[in-house]
Image 1 (spheres, rainbow, N blue to C red):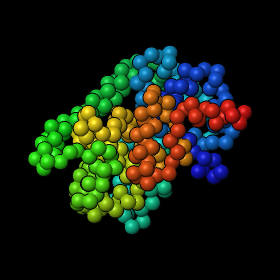
Image 2 (image 1 turned 30 degrees about the vertical axis):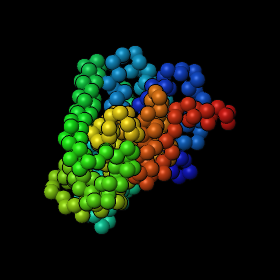
Image 3 (image 1 turned 180 degrees about the horizontal axis):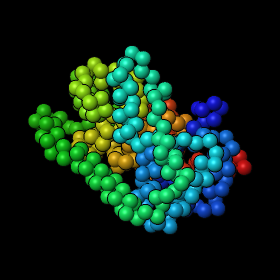
Image 4 (image 1 turned 180 degrees about the vertical axis):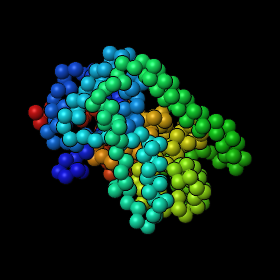
Length: 294
């Protein structure tokens, strides 16, 4: 909440639906401006910039600018956001409060207002390739683990865990080295130091955005590397969709329009295992909440 205003954040897919629904989006825009604080996700802005069609890209940022007519701000993409949180924690762990760390992306807000990049096709192409490469590398990082992990299960005569929660329970019942090791990679990059396990544990406990991101990555580890491809609980959201988990603690409601509801399902599970109370809803349900009360 900001004052009396609940905070809502859109996934990139929800921004696309605003454009696709045309006149039907007017009720949504009016509803947001009448009683909500809109918080842009910097990662979504980067994805919108990568839209190949310049006409659609212009339309997307026209709607973003219209959202800015009401109370809004924008948070940095996940890499910079984590860097800022880690740097502040490393500076003074005992006084760290994630809610007071300035992660506002002022330059992103200015870019939305000025829209000077909208018809920069070269920038769109570079951004598209960057996001595509990031997705590919992220998927390969975990899927390449599957053959070796399978050997480990076979050697111990065990079946892979059939659910994410079972996989996490096995990790937590041991020493949890994978959890802390994954956290340490991100922490060391932000703090530019060799952090201890105790430091990473403490940071993960007191910093929900960091915790959400780690659990999102563990979801990919489970889905792409651990579970039997033919059985078990599936989580099909890609890397960028899961990176949106970092914004969950910063909003009251997160809205996604991804087809088949896969991102909604995955983020709800991340929120549950990370202990985050944010509501994750479909774009249609979010729209209907305004239409019912109109």
